[in-house]
Image 1 (cartoon, rainbow, N blue to C red):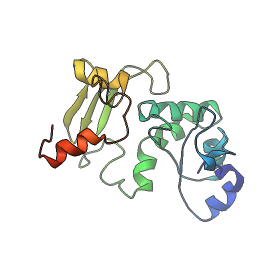
Image 2 (cartoon, rainbow, N blue to C red):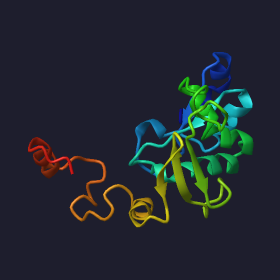
Image 3 (cartoon, rainbow, N blue to C red):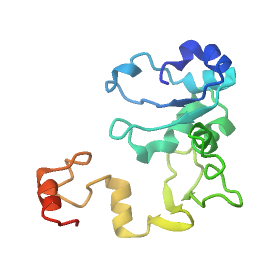
Image 4 (cartoon, rainbow, N blue to C red):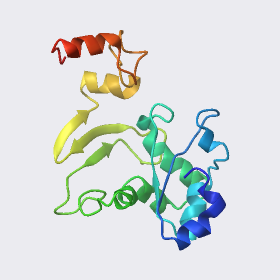
Length: 178
């Protein structure tokens, strides 16, 4: 909902939630031609449930929390921005009874951060899914992925982060799942 600012009152009246992508560099997607960083703030003020999303490789998911920080910088409330990367997204997907906040009976999906979630200096230290640690920045391979992205450490795939190579297809056809 990159251009939701144009019809925020209509969206609110229809009781429709919006997921916003924060494009922070020129070019990219045609549907973001009239995107405005104030969109989340305008939607929030109109009473719309706002979530943020990324669109790898256009907007790197490793910078997901930055969307909330940009939302605050453009006038969104801090609580609204934090909800937009947690519970609001769960509500948008109809999963709020299972995920989106830390409560008894919900899946223990969470990240441990090194500082303020809205600071560009903060990074993910650990990621837990259903109570199981799946990422730890002190692990060398996890750290390499965190700083280098998909394909990091694999010279054959570093430039093919988002595509399956012919070699991968041949290996899969031969039963090699490595």
